[in-house]
Image (cartoon, rainbow, N blue to C red; front, side, top):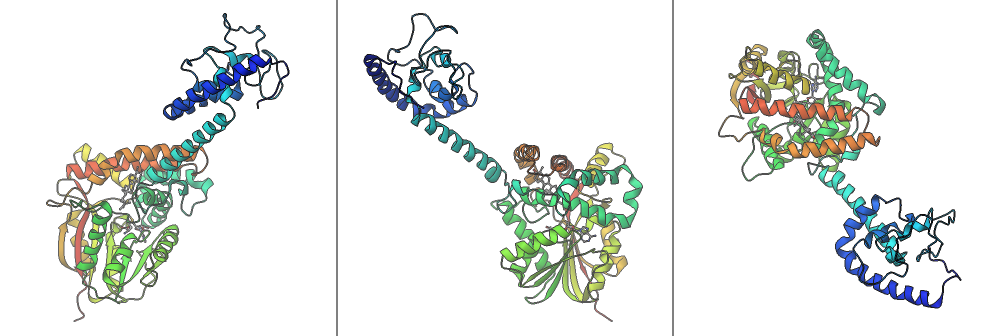
Length: 476
Ligand SMILES: C=C(CC[C@@H](C)[C@H]1CC[C@H]2C3=CC[C@H]4[C@H](C)[C@@H](O)CC[C@]4(C)[C@H]3CC[C@]12C)C(C)C
Ligand SMILES: C[S@@+](CC[C@H](N)C(=O)[O-])C[C@H]1O[C@@H](n2cnc3c(N)ncnc32)[C@H](O)[C@@H]1O
């Protein structure tokens, strides 16, 4: 960049050396404290500054403690023929390569310090780039991954849906709600639920973790620990022994399955309607070294591909709420359970505080149904009746969300700042074409759903953890 020019006199060269020394000292003093500002400034180049020397010119904005060789008594004008003390090119002259108007290096105040080039130039450039890269990495990977073991934001996909069809599938998902009769058609529900999980599975994993359910907050325990305790309680309730075979109806990506297998030593078979979740669950099982205890099948829990009386126990966590008719899934679970064995379910229901005539209550429940692919929430009082109807004995029934349990929705509320950050991450990634088109819409839907769920919890009209423990009677 520095070119020798025979037009320079010895004294001007000496003077320049002196200047260069002074500039270096000054700049090194400034460099440490100002680097960030310099870098930011440098990102918005002033068009009157020589583009080649932009960084250095910016460093030297504070007046230097020495005289400028080229500082003219009158500031240079567009027409004044000055010489650039960095590249020694005369003002207004174009070299066709690096400099548009060399005159611009003489923009007051003193831009002579641009002589610190090229080391400073590249150093600042490298530092700026590194800072930006580190910031971006931190934002997307560290902050962007709300749950430690979740997915990274850059991996967000539409599940088994091809990326160019994500937007269309999201629109289709909403069309179920625009035509309420569709949703009442029970046979269409599994496909609608499947579409939903293609759209949300990655976002759930990214922002929530591998267990797609709520749990009561436990003082002094992390979300991950509280979740595990809630899952282990389910298997403790069904009283199974190591080596026995248990069913996970609606297993998601298998967070509960792995916790339960590791805790109980049982063989867990999970079923989910969503093919993408099967592949995720299998990959997680393998990574956790639990493939020998955990198996996952893609299928409909309304008509399971399992033999009658083939399981020693069964559980479902926040999954059977997707069934258009609860008796259909309960009767299937009844069929595959061995006589005398237990089944526990954590159900999503409206509580006795829900009033169908209260417009706010209706709005909240509708909001929960639409954002969670539910064909219609049931009342807590219906659950035991359905269970008895299909042949189960009710052993225990309790809303695990009731005090002294701590609010399950506090995790949703605490995450609000994270949701905004996620919203920015998703917007950036979709705009850059990294995340498929439609991801922003799905994220926005979940964002609103989180609000409805919180309101459901705060008003007490809804619970996602109505626990019911059922027994298949022994054969007479
Ligand atoms: C049982 C079901 C799912 C329950 C929960 C696991 C999910 C319900 C709402 C979801 C979320 C809402 C807000 C999202 C946020 C905007 C995003 O940035 C990160 C992910 C969320 C936190 C997401 C995580 C999962 C939920 C809490 C239903 C479907 C029967
Ligand atoms: C909210 S997720 C819960 C997953 C898991 N129980 C957990 O807690 O992580 C609901 C699960 O039910 C499954 N599901 C819903 N309807 C289903 C159906 N008809 N057949 C099989 N699985 C179904 C979904 O695919 C999803 O895996």
